[in-house]
Image (cartoon, rainbow, N blue to C red; front, side, top):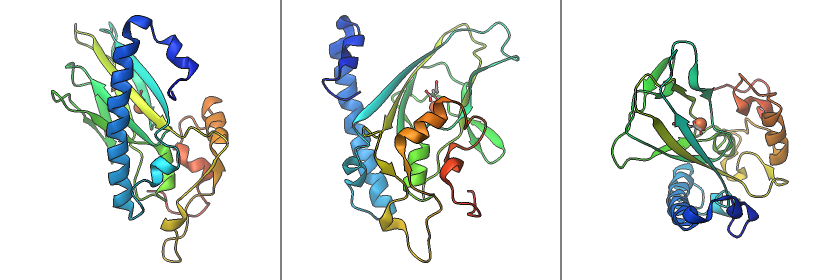
Length: 212
Ligand SMILES: O=C(O)CCC(=O)C(=O)O
Ligand SMILES: [Fe+2]
């Protein structure tokens, strides 16, 4: 949420100050990461910041109690994050968060003090496939302890802005693999679940370009 947004009022007063401190720390980390990711693409380091990708944050808190029939369900179904970047912290209950590597699911077990960073679909598109959004899921919890995680998803703050691969990354050798789109249209399709079960990046992928 942007600073001074009325959404802050939804945060209980007793934890508003702590939440604001957490938000500040997460934004600082994301700014540094976005700058490194821009350098990795060979574009100016504040490009993602300039594109308003630090301003809108969605904070998702997850609580996974012990499940009596874990073989029947997932804690969170397989998905990629519909954002630029995700910063995620998890408690010590491991063996549940997994990422897809090829055909395999690989555990992302908690490491004390470590933070999980996911590349989101929008960064995959903006980078013209230089970076790839990560498919992940959470298994149902079989342990007595509760698993808790907090994910902060960074998305552009201007919903009516046009996004697409950065022009600096497009050349005759590396043509654009995505059409430009209005961000609110991406959200609309995501919310009506039109993109469910597909790679969300496919909605603007130019036909006949290779999927990676
Ligand atoms: O609970 C987790 O570790 C995953 C949360 C997640 O993938 C999400 O909020 O998008
Ligand atoms: Fe996620």
